Image (cartoon, rainbow, N blue to C red; front, top):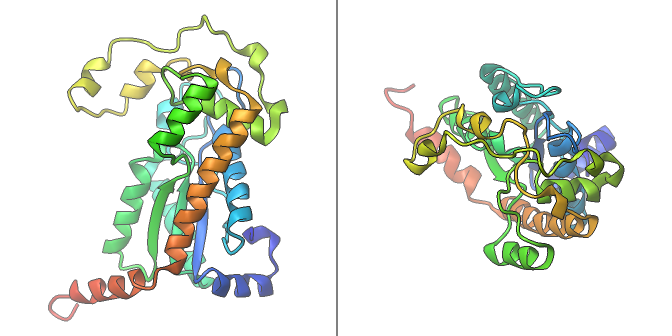
Length: 270
């Protein structure tokens, strides 16, 4: 049940069918090497959510957010990176509107690795604003170690996954194979630039770590990708996402306990 495809009356019914739960897809528009489109993260999120909707028809999916935190890829043509304060304000405004339309449980489906710190912080920041809704976050790339091993044994192991790699390339193939240009991929082009290893080795985070190591915006082995792998990945990720959404839909305690938390956080009659 995609928000934009529903009529106003259908959306009103969808609020009930979903137990006031809505999924908000969030990704990024950025460079993915020479062989993948700028909308890679959006397309991957889209194909996974489409499959998850087949598994869980009561899933309501809000319109996509395709801009966000992408500072680490600003050295790549095509990246649209928004300032942090604008991202947080945008997400808050959207969530406020989702709630105004009847939803209390908002699940952000994150399709961009660069959001892994931004989106949990956004969820936490809603507590101090005493919002009447709860924000959950999941990464749509979730899979078990056993599932990962099975794919590696079958299709070959990606030695350095993470960006425009085997899996991202395969998932875009599953979405629309015409968008993948493997003829532009050069396996001899360096994917990894040394000099910043000391940060990760010593538990140090810096925003410049990733761009220092990934100047070409490619990691891993995109040459191992194929459409069959993309379809398998899509099925795995969609199955987990549908399960996660169902858990949130069926829960009856989170909102009750959240309201109790807000009351207990009131001091001096505030």
